[in-house]
Length: 322
Length: 181
Ligand code: SF4
Ligand code: SF4
Figure 1 (cartoon, rainbow over the protein chains, first blue to last red):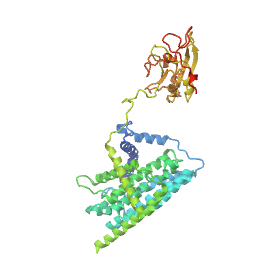
Figure 2: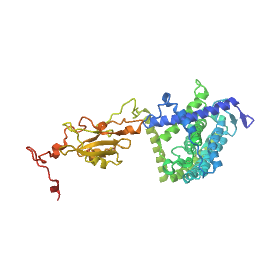
Figure 3: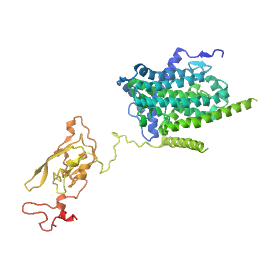
Figure 4: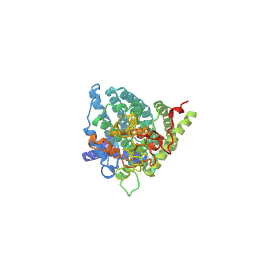
């Protein structure tokens, strides 16, 4: 591999990956509602179509035909731009996801950094949306999102450095290959835990959904949004759940590696779906912490833990080499 | 060190929560799929209102208006009228079910058990006016939930030529004022 970036996908691949990712995100509306229903001893939407699957279409139609209202006091340009940012950043981040050998969009030597950069860029969507709405609650939500992202971003990157040290590369495909002799979820258990907490905080899902805490600040940053603009925030959240699950699988659970009798793509999708379900389970069960607890948990507990993990992994790697 | 232990405890308790919720994958949903599956309602369920009759088959309602007064949304309207013996009865009795909140206060206020709520809630209509029930819609032939109660057997009744409690085998009515201290 001489080039830092290799395009491995054709146009067909790009369109295929984009549309299947969008389809998964849309399906997640249904999956989440059904699964939370099951875990709360309810049924969830089950009327429309087989197993209620057409609920996705109904939700889509509803959201497309809702009045798309821009409040007169809002900062119009930014208000319109904000929901697009989350979609664009998360979808472009999918470019480096190694679905299977030969399936993907680009093969990038610094894929991991690229992912980290884009996933933290997506917070601009929330911050700008909250700011442009010119609403007190929206601004509160935006401020929370900014502070939360800064504190959880720090150890998100640090938690992954253990993986980078063990595999010796930032290239996601090489990281997957490096797990042939054992997935990193075993050797990097602490890193996995830290990373999961960080990505949940990054995608603003419960229990880290403080930017949109319904009970305190009504709906937070998207309080003034309606129609398809709200829908973009919504789909953006599901996209980032999908991306996070894909990254967890890539970095810690051996990506496409798995028993030979099924194609690698299957193993990747299978593991990713399990992690998506885990995200839904998180939402179904955990309460939201208080804001100051969230911050002190991030800075006083998770960050030191990440540093310890880094130190121990680094020491072990050096010791093994010598 | 203490706060470190607290953090660990907190994290472990989160995992416990996750486990407990995950176990619910295998419990049966409590949902009753209503139109196909009927709900089991209890006799005291507060649904559609009826006007009942006493065991002798006469209207229980004495048009005292207490239910109309008790109703928080003012959806009961009635007009008092008298028969030849001076017994009160409602000339019309109208409940607007599009306003009724099924609170049951009318049933509690009624001294004669005339007005009662029943376990029936399927009262959807396309036309709002169809939600207004008149006396003939409300009045049923039975006694409702209280089979033996007859208001006049307890309160006494004055008819032409006989005051309350003056007939044979009849106790004179209690003078409620004597109960005052
Ligand atoms: S149930 Fe309540 S609201 Fe309905 S008629 Fe009786 S008192 Fe009024
Ligand atoms: S229904 Fe009962 S409370 Fe209402 S007017 Fe008749 S007797 Fe009085």
